[in-house]
Image (tube, rainbow, N blue to C red; front, top):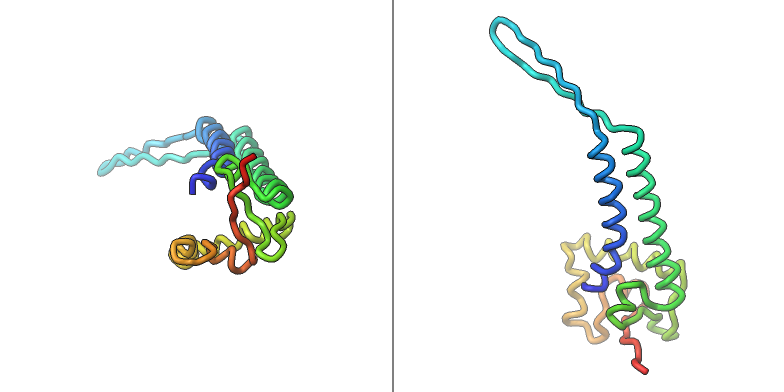
Length: 149
């Protein structure tokens, strides 16, 4: 769990910066309508071009980071940034080697199945002999500690 928090933090910071620029550059215009029986105020908010570009750029950079971290880095070394800090790796259950870029991305997406069933898939390691999530079972992967040495 802590590895996921470490992994997602750079994405959240990037997305937060884009959102902050978007919201801070919004423009609001209000019109007041006064009639004999009521006073009404109508407001509209418009996003600025700068804010939209900043949000788009932050989203694209965040997506590239996720693909690099979960696809390339984890696929070739077995560890994403968070897994490196927490000292464990994801490897093939059959070969014991890192699973490669494509399978690593698919494994990341397979975690949506863990979440779709009320997050029960993430609890599988509590009772599974190999401590695998449902996504790990689907992808035939296991998480192992990185040997210290």
